[in-house]
Image 1 (cartoon, rainbow, N blue to C red):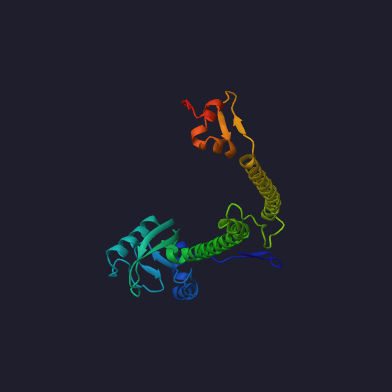
Image 2 (cartoon, rainbow, N blue to C red):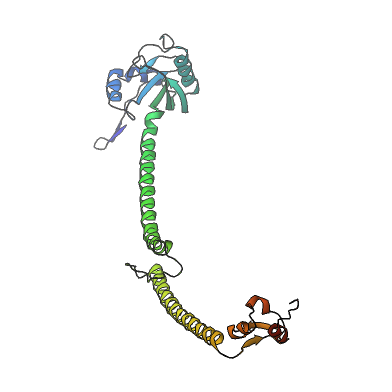
Length: 279
């Protein structure tokens, strides 16, 4: 409807609603829909409520007259019965090897008695998600490898200095305490090596002092025994009960005694040769 102002006319064109179908050029409609696709093999199609195939990229004729197999036939019936909304079904075109899961969005045009639909295969719709999933798995794998590598590197930085410390002390004897040598970083392990070196240095110092004291005591004991046994006087070491703990060789030789015979006896008995039970 158009308004023609110079003449103050309203110009309009009309037709009967029942004649709408005859006004549509099916060939032009098919040519336009052929260029439309969804995914790799998705396409639009139009069925009439009587099963007539108005447009389909592969099929033609009437849906009920085609030999498409029972599964596809039931799917077609389901589409014509539902007419609107979303529908999931299995479908196999004549040029395909096997039936595949499919999804269609349906819209019913009551003026024409048509079910207009756009269809796509589920595996093709999910393919980007599958690729994204594989990408995420790959990224997760790379991330995991990086984490493992970093963990291994950090553990190596920590354990290698400790292994050097263990190796240093592993085969050492009790008196072989040498200072720790090697390069250590300025961290806790390096500080530990430094403290161990201080401890070892002090331990070596005390060890030297102890050896000196032991040697001096041994020399003193040897000197004492020499003087004790070679003195021309009778010398004896007694306990508080006057029992002989130790007696010199001069006293033993005087009575022709042995040390084991006099030890534990009273001094007088030991010198005269009269022995008693030491208990």
